[in-house]
Amino acid sequence: MGSECKRQNTWRQTSDVDRLLELQLGVYDTELTEEGKELLSWEEEEKSMKLQQVHRDIVLDVPPDFQGEDFILLGSTPRCKVQGLALKYPTEAPPLPSSAGTSSYMAFDISDHISSSGPVPARSLHILTTQGHPEFTTSIVELIMGVRSEMGVIQGELLEEGKERAPKPHDGLKVGAVMLSMLGYEEAKDESGTH
Image (cartoon, rainbow, N blue to C red):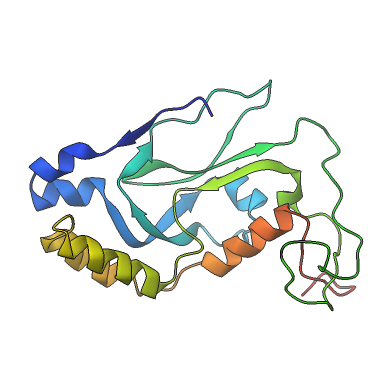
């Protein structure tokens, strides 16, 4: 997308303290920007998004504009400045949500009784990325840590921190629902606007 992604290769030659500053394992709070809260449909009082992290690669900066549209920074952590990006469609009228009564026309066949209830902020997005993994559960992260520990890649304080963070509550399902709404699948709301 025009920015630079760096692998944190230097951490293997440094102390465990330095490793902790570069690698993220387990659930981290991403402080959301105001635009991030709006686009992800976070409540005003919710300041952060909690996602499972398993990475040592980082995006250094928000990429330059794409065909005249600016990328939007969704949030940051102290260890990773760019924790998520979004790019809106270059039009005032994003694709409309589906008016179909079922999801059977899509790859995501979750339920036949849920229908669209109108546009949500994520429907205006053309691109949505997160550094964290909304699709990862605690058991997936623990399995990855176990394999990488056996390989000698993750050890010491770093492994212990990952073991402490992995079981923490996270927003993976909530972010997954936002991603589905971006694709046109939304949970039905009643007349009051609640689910």
